[in-house]
Image (cartoon, rainbow, N blue to C red):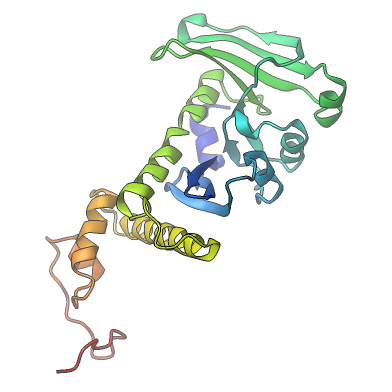
Length: 261
């Protein structure tokens, strides 16, 4: 199966978390539109791997996550649900090689293997073969070891999927920089969660508008335009597309008058 065919058939999602004050924002980002598909706000004490217990798993989807989410029992449950995962192996990893694919080392792929876990408990938690790919990043020079249950995609595609994790970091950065989430208005659990959900809802609404209107402007530009025209009787499409002529509002418009003078 080619990587292009796989990208058409499968959904690629990134799971990550970010510390926010005394809370932690666990986010599953859908790469099709950089929109959160799942969010869970917990206290800072919850370990990342526990989120896999409440994560809705979609068969056929790829879940990309860092090694903080490596738990073989939970990964095997994801495997049995028909989903694919791509993550990094923890060091040291006690596993034996079962089979090795022929690789072209000039591409950065050092080895592409099928392995079985050696540990008694680990082998019981994940009793099937795992695919282990050792890859040397040409940009940083670091050697990375990936684990996945997908056996059809090329090794370079698996490495590219893991590299796409930077998009969730951009999501967290955008949220904190542009939606006033660096400082919290309150310190109670309800206050923190309310402010986080308001910020995420704003991001999602702007992302949906940007996609529906096929805008080339960045999310930040759309946010700035909407923030200065929030009380104007201007259609959103016209505010974000200056070259488009504004149509007259119908007499039965749902927009009400805010102030009567």
